[in-house]
Length: 239
Image 1 (cartoon, rainbow, N blue to C red):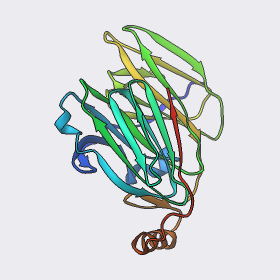
Image 2: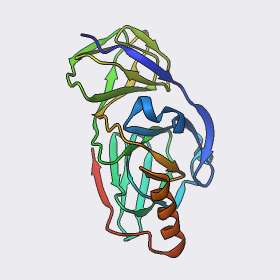
Image 3: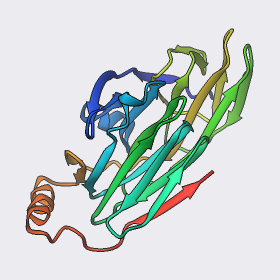
């Protein structure tokens, strides 16, 4: 059975970090349907002034961040002094666990094209960066009753399981075991993301995501008191 598109969210232009211009696609209002995907920000610019201010050192707790660059360069650094850069076609994960501080600083490039996704821990992500030439089609089996699957049209419009999806749109897929993606007259790039549904309560404020309001208050109390870091963060870079 084909996994049909059950929801589309295109997002809105905003700023985050120290003034980075981006499109916020998923957020507080989409948590339940897109579980365990919490937030999705997309960036696409040929003007370095849109993103050079970056995301200076800031805290996270209770989430895993996934950053993917189709084009561009971004330097990550954490509170332990770990520093690494990702380039065209590369991705990085940060498992914040009980607490981490890190920065994400884009570097000047001809085009900055990519996304950042927040996942609710302990969800794990299985992703594909799919490129299709004009008038092409791909079909693949994706079984799993408890799987939460979405695609994001990073560049170009697409037909996903028979439904037209505009560029820069997060399309949530329903139940089934097959997915089809088709391009039109232009080449497209789509990010396919799959994870297990958690069906857990979410208490979220700023960069911290917990299960209850009490846990959220405790996290910010520890942030203010200097007791925020409980264990080392985990990083992983992949091509």
